[in-house]
Image 1 (cartoon, rainbow, N blue to C red):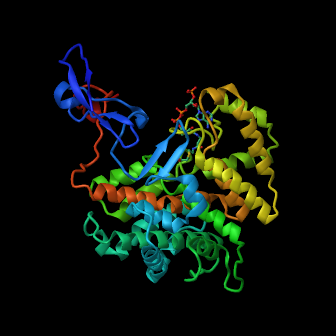
Image 2 (spheres, rainbow, N blue to C red):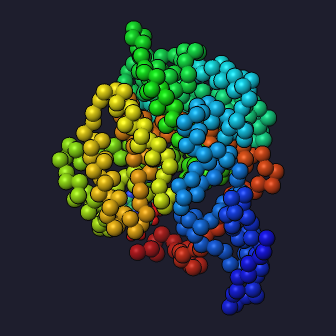
Length: 429
Ligand code: CMC
């Protein structure tokens, strides 16, 4: 691979190596830049910065391609299930029949929270946001599995992954029950992963929640579609925390907090809130589009736009089809669906959105589907987090397992005061 040369007026030129990935993406390796020239690069938001080399997920935003460990998301969504996808992401290969059975059994064996951990829920006010509880409880989980936190080069990744993937679902369901003042419902071993999530949320001691196979399937698809997305904000957070040698539970807890933001995993909640605002306020959809375009307004079209996808988001396309199926099975209609379709139709033909390559993203339809199933909107980002967990685990491991990895420590261009003396309080104005 050839080198590139950067020319400087006040320093000698530097030749830098070019790194090429398996999909022919190219990056300039600037590791020697500062020591050789005194310069650093400045890239707020990291739009042009590769923070690592990774073999987990490939994403081509121009072509709308997303592959986990080389396998297209469309094929996984059609043929696989969430637990198999989790194993694929974490271990790198589709599991054999024997391995798939073993991993599923480990998940079943570890689905129950330690009884003492249940008391933590009593410390939260009833109206706590479930993402706050999720992040806190996942961190608290580490106290119950100290052996799995002793070293950052985890020997038993499979066990830690099973505990986290299984218990995040139990925590999520229990936090929902806590906010409703309902008794916790325990998982049923013979249920599938998604079925158990819905069961623990919606069953009552005297009434078992019966769920249509297509709805279980839809939840499983949603989790698969969220399972990884290379170096997004929460995954980069997990990797950064991992780079300090922090344990898996601590890193995932930080990832959940990063995901909570409305520009990231909180966008599914924000989309439905936006649609409800339009519906309840009988707002004119065209005027909302104008507001989204107006730089003086703080209104954004939630569920639209993506840092990386500049053509279409393949996840959104699958979810759009899934939404039709779910509404069909449930024999339901929702006025928000009509508003969403109208917004989408206008935005996709509006030069503002077309020129900026702003398309519906994964969050545009996921909230609408979850709402139809009966999931309250503050739980939408929790479903995103459950789905994203295998990706976070895979990325944590990629960092922790790499003996060459260094602690992440970006630099900055300082823009504050230059040196000035300390002024005693009596002399300050
Ligand atoms: N509505 C109106 N204008 C927008 C929107 C939007 N949703 N998204 C981007 N723009 C405009 C933005 O104002 C800017 O215009 P200009 O060039 O005139 O200054 C241009 O498009 C580029 O936007 P940007 O903010 O520089 O893009 P970004 O890559 O920094 O941000 C984003 C990406 C997803 C945060 C942003 O598109 C956004 O805020 N979307 C709404 C929130 C959302 O749906 N987030 C979920 C993302 S997908 C799930 C996930 O991976 O987390």
